[in-house]
Length: 439
Image 1 (cartoon, rainbow, N blue to C red):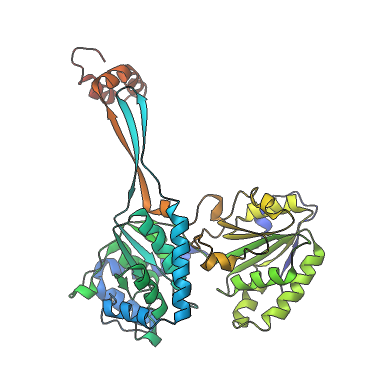
Image 2: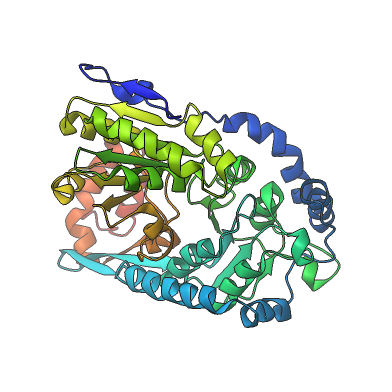
């Protein structure tokens, strides 16, 4: 089922040789552009039309009534509620340690620079609702924003026919458990446009004030809309299909490896599952386990499509050193290390959204209850981007405070550089403060 790529003996840059889902976001941008522009121009009426067309739901209002959010929490299955409470507790514990503190540097006597960390005022949090629903994503978005001190949190999630045109009840329940009461039954590109531009309507339930940042994963249409809105608002990342890479040697249990590859393939037919190993015997055993386990999994057709696609496969390498170079080049959203001395290898990894060390730290733990965040960079973006965190919602602002003596001391240098850059008015702005010619 899994394609096999043999890199043994190869000294080429592996980036162009590795399996990867091919998505052209620029094409998707042009396809959703009319929707985004209509929402910008017409607000509620355009959102209503797009929702009827794409979701088959006719919206009476955009905002979910507070009573519906509260009712979802009250009727939530006890085991799901208990699980969400644990997830919230662990996520809050991890994210609390990410808080930043203001730092003041004394540059010279009378001259300081303070770096302040200021939260954005209003954040739009997108929670998908397509092939699966994700109450856990509510937690992963909301907890770091709350920890950062964001003043207003807005959740948008697609309406579900089976829930009377409201977002999934478990998503609403997670919002209730986190104290989020501004929730909109809007999905896709129209949701991103609503969050970025705001929406005006005749009634309060048809209005949405624009946000400062939009975060959260979504399909290619959501990603395309986020690309369009970048600059109008901040975005966390352009999320693509989920992916897992596993670096494993002959000590790995093929049952575990196969199960973990399948767990990510379950998300989406475009999901990527990649095994990198120096053990042909493990590769063969994993192939056999994949065939056995896929036969009994619930979403077998979806999993088979993902595992057989060009974005998934087994990569054979000479040794773990080459394997490390391969996984660094791949820069997976999720990277598992199932080798001897797994922690030592994990600490040498440069590029990954999150790293899961050893046999007892599967990606599914991180999806839910490790305390880490599961909103992570995809498509190789882990080479330059991080997952969602408290820092995602903070802006570093420098506060510069010099007294007269401190400015006088450096004035000559400012003037010299201003003249060197042919910006004499910059120097004059300093000279004006010292009319006696001391600058």
